[in-house]
Image 1 (cartoon, rainbow, N blue to C red):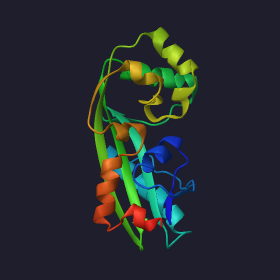
Image 2 (image 1 turned 45 degrees about the vertical axis):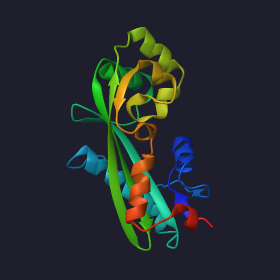
Image 3 (image 1 turned 180 degrees about the vertical axis):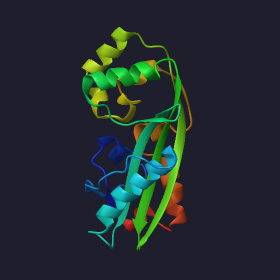
Image 4 (image 1 turned 90 degrees about the vertical axis):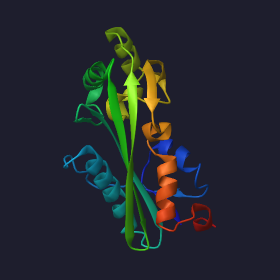
Length: 190
């Protein structure tokens, strides 16, 4: 049995590229807020999410992920309301930032981890464009206050790296991590 430790519809859609049959069990693990680096933070939170579900399902293959946005070394999580989203987007406007997703697989009593980094370049956004986008509600539950696959598409000048990472689950990196762990998702779900 494969379990995705996330309620994100975007992660579920991306995992279906690798694994047709899985169940979702949302982790209630308390995320850490600080680490030595953003990469370590993302991986640590992915491990916490996967481990909390694996503890209840020791025979399952459990996948956890955590995505963060980083601008000039500062981590942008989910915004605290409309004003927070507008502030984040104003800071991202016209700049390059990184999207880092930590991934973890718990299987057979072991934890396998990795991460993916993608550079995202935002074009300049006017205050009015930011307000209109935030008013859609889409940015309010997203790290960095935007969705690449949604309304923010019109603000993104270019990306370098894995687009699925920016959406929330780096599919290729997860596939390679599963290979390291000796997991074939299709066989695991039969």
